[in-house]
Length: 230
Image (cartoon, rainbow, N blue to C red):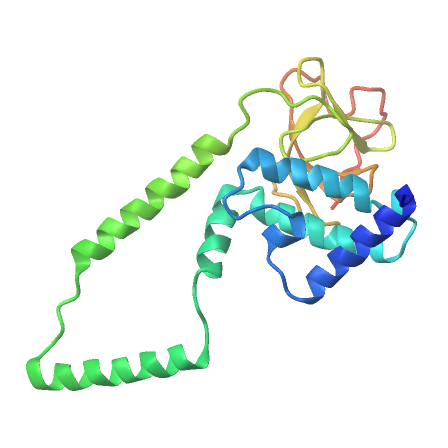
């Protein structure tokens, strides 16, 4: 029977190998491209617990967590996931480039012989409209149906309190809280200008927090000053 430490080390080695072979964000999180937002969120939380440096005690865990956080940052946002999926479906190779070049030359020759080519503007407008509807639908159906119970792992949608040291801690959305996390970004990234950045005690990144109207101010748990993360 393998020990828990052996299972963690084997999983970390497997994840590092996956990243070296340029696997997709879905492969990093271990989900299918058709996975629901809840499935992706569950996979992220499971891997975050498994590969956290405090659990593994390995230097490679920092690189593992960076890949996990990067995959979560893309796949948790409907628009980013839509664009990522579209890029994954686009074949890019030399033969395609050569074929496109030949087609371009053929079009130029036909234009010289028959006049300007009429572009199917109606078709372009129709497919553009379908794309906009698809993005809006992803936004509508990806919103959580209710509050998520706190498990001390900060993610988009988490309700948080800000302590005296200006760190965020996840709390229940049913009770008083200082704000909610709009997104979790890497330490070297900036939060949107209408949010406040605070570090996560678990070392997952920087939480971009929206102010809660019910709170009297940032850090209602007793903090004296307001220090935001740039």
